[in-house]
Length: 133
Length: 316
Image 1 (cartoon, each protein chain N blue to C red):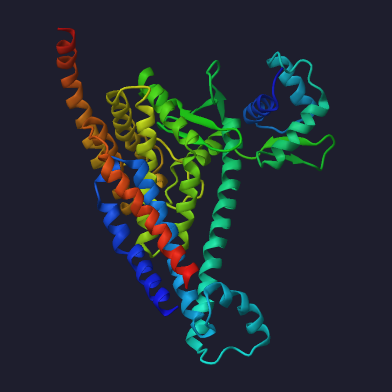
Image 2 (image 1 turned 90 degrees about the horizontal axis):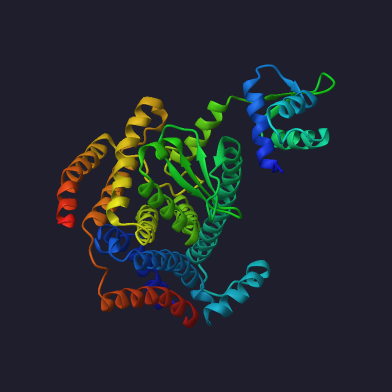
């Protein structure tokens, strides 16, 4: 059984691939073709998930036509850029306060770290010889 | 009251300038990061209490009696008067400043926490759409995002998630990846995000105070060090240091070729530089933690820092 999260993901994949807007029924058919999970989807489930995605700001719909046609607000690449911006964001007071593994470093710092790695690569075989012997 | 006010003001000044500056320069916090973190918290709380407390005790001097009595009478006297004889403009000014400062700190905390929550929710929905969970992993879920930049971070909250990028998976070998995952899970387990948000708010409320800026930079480094130490329980220092150095040296390439908007100000870079080097350095050349006596001494100092403003306020 696919979770709502999985369903949201597959719907967005379809919308990102399709450049023209799709109705909920079109989307349901496409999902039914491409994924096994889409086979026994109810149209109401599709509508629920689509309105969730609309509320989150990922999907918009053309309300002038019946049935409503849904389309992705922006490309996948744009969303990925937004996500990375939040993680690596330049402003020091970024409110997400995410603790990420290694922040950005200056080119000089990167060079120092690289030298350190090469030194260690040279040292490592000696170490392993020593432990083997 | 005057004695308490002057002592609290002196304490506030000490904790706003020389103490955080000295502690930020000290080397020992990398040896005993947990204790250093406690000391930073004691400095922040004691500093805030002293600043507000000094203004309140000064403003209440004409009211006589104890601080609590003075505070209890204050609303009625302000509304209906008459104010006690000898109440000057300067006393009213001190009381108003105390109220404003307290409100400023509390409101800023509320704003920071709310904004953080909102951004995290948005971030979580982005992660859920753009990433795939790693199947068959015990523990909190790990999501992989499709990006060449090597990044790893964790999202706290009701459903915690560790996020890694394709770039990171390609860059590191499996033991190094495990070290990174252990590092991120340590952040989640030890609830580091609460400290980070608190000091973030502290910094944005008092941006011109060393107490706040240094504290925030130091606390961000200390939580990384604590997470490194947790990660080292599962892997050796060599592997973890290698992972940090690889990610640190690779990231610039990824960023300069992809996106110039990620380039940070030189000041932020400088602090990041020393932070990454320091982490690698203490893994490669490990130092023992502080001797027990010194650790106890620092803990006692932290307790005294908290007790002094409280005792002065309650006794005055």
